[in-house]
Length: 95
Image (tube, one colour):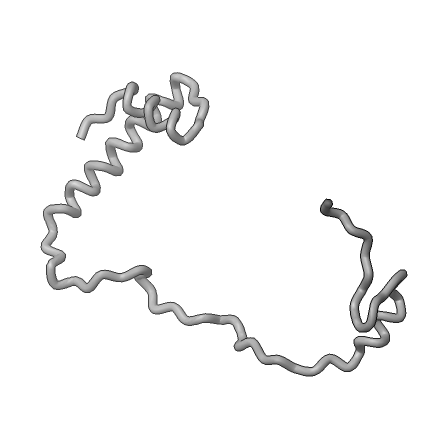
C-alpha cells in the first residue's frame, strides 16, 4: 500500500506533530511497511482463533487489599499543627 507525504502530513496534524521533510519521508516508508504487513495478516484465516485482549495469560501481581487496624493514629496526629477530633485540620484552599 502506498502512503503519500500528504497522508503523513494529515496524520501528523491530527497527532499535533511537527515534522521535518526528512521525517515525513521516513515515516511514509515506515507506514508503508507496517500497512503491507497488515495486508499479509489479512490473508490468514483467523476464524478459529478466539479474540484476546492480551497475548499472554496475565494475572494480577498485586496483593489483595486487606483492611488492617492502624494503632499509630495518635502518634501521627500529635504532630499536626491543628486537628479536629481524629482528623488533620487544614486551611480552606477552595472558595
